[in-house]
Structures are given as C-alpha cells and as structure tokens.
Length: 175
Image (cartoon, rainbow, N blue to C red):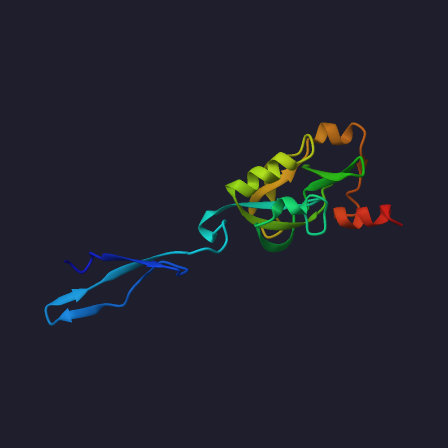
C-alpha cells in the first residue's frame, strides 16, 4: 500500500469522517485509514443533506404563521438585503419584495439552511405568486430568497418599504 492509499474503516455512531493518524503494524508496514462515520439515530436531516440556503422576510421568519414549515431547518441568523428592494403588504397577510433600480430600501430577514425535503414543504406552503429568486444581501452575497412579482404588488397593494421590515409593519396592525 502506497502512502497515498487508504484502508476504509466504517464506524457507527460518530459524527464526521476523518483521516486516522498513521499506525505502524510493524517496521515495514505503515497503515493509513480513512474513518467514515455513519450516524445512528439522530436527526433525519443531517448536516450533509442541508443543501439549500434561503433568505426569508415575512411569515416564514421566527414567530411567523408559516415558520413551522421550516421545522428541521438550520437558522443561520438575521440578515438584511442590500438597499435595492421595495416591500409591499399583500392584503396584510404577507409581504411581497422585489428589486428596483432606484428608490430601494434594505429589508430585514433571516437566513436558513435546509434539506431538499424541507424546501419542498416550504415551497408548497407559500402563498400565491411568491417565488424563489436571487436576493442581494447588504454584505454583498447573492442568495436564494422569496420574491414577489412587481406588477402584482403595484397593482393594488400597499407599499410598506418605509418600514423595511415585515414584522415592524405587522406590529402596526395590532395597535
């Protein structure tokens, strides 16, 4: 076995694959092993299957009506978009965000990492017309996010861009 070759050792119940330290079987044989762990039990959605990252800015956020659809997703933190969006209230039920060339604001939201299965549940539960598209964050990253068609928003819904945050606007509805 050459220095670049490995034996594979299967270990049940561990949490990550790694290369084991070299071990000598005798003075002439150096054993290198790659240990591959397979979790026993634990979460159905392991870190290796968390393939989709998504920016949300409305009812999918923590405390929102659709947040349970993100069960099993990893919360990555609070984020803001670059100041290139307009935010509308769609019937005071959920927000609709779209990108503009001028007059945009930064919109508050949250990032989640999820499996394809969770994404399918999120997508199936979204209200009409919302869709997944590129969203520019204030840190310069471009990520997948939930957007709304501009023509539908402007055709009869309220512009709430001054709030820059769905939750801040929704709080005014309870007053």
